[in-house]
Length: 297
Ligand code: ARG
Image 1 (cartoon, rainbow, N blue to C red):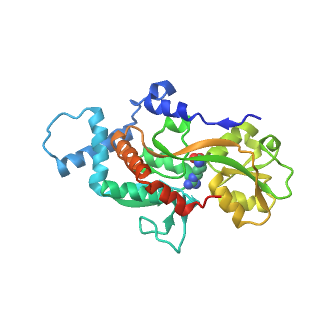
Image 2 (cartoon, helix red, strand yellow):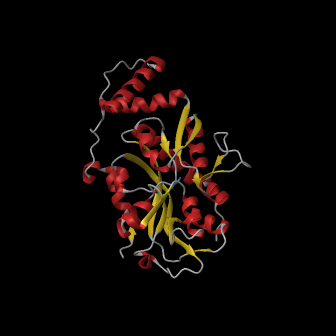
Image 3 (cartoon, rainbow, N blue to C red):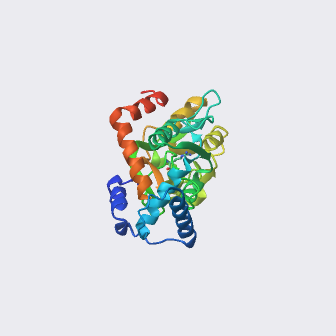
């Protein structure tokens, strides 16, 4: 059984040179053009500094970024079913004033603060996050989202801020000891995640059970409806801790990197996000956020 290791170098190369990955920055749908133009016009009328130049396609997308800033909000799309990165906790108040907390929520909160914007968190299905960015309804996707070559064709990714591993959860009495034993078994995954994508690729669609939330897949495992769950290591640890009779296999299934996503071509916002991530890394604030949610084991 092949073990998938995402080539981060390749993904980074895609980010730098889209042509190398078969993507094209000039693929603008009519809807996108309208959104960008409207946003740029809104910006023009609101805060025209009197530059008075013709807008090139590039400037239009930069101005669309500014228009978001002018609106005063940074809309983060996420799927808050993924502790410790994003989840609901009614005993806490998240950076947007809701009960959504976690590493991504706090990173986005710090970025918004940096940009002088109010953070608004939208909790949606994981596989709706990229469409939401593409349509311009959300500014950033922050969801423990793995950088993959396929996703790089649809959105732009920031610098990475975490590494992760896709792991396998089984019941304590399971005979499954590693990825090779998964052939022919029923595997539970969260719909649209890399666990879903890789497992479908490796073991075939008929062996995959997709659930709206990772925790639903884990629930199905405890009820004997699936034989294993493939999911990211940090939520996996929490789900295994919350449920009796489950264990995490040592053998990793795949390694990956998380980054924030923005609409393809929104280089202004992407630069701002990268700068904020850099500052969070250098100041030690990122480590602080991670330490708050993940206790070293
Ligand atoms: N890292 C995996 C992926 O990018 C899973 C992320 C799931 N995130 C979430 N907030 N539910 O596909």
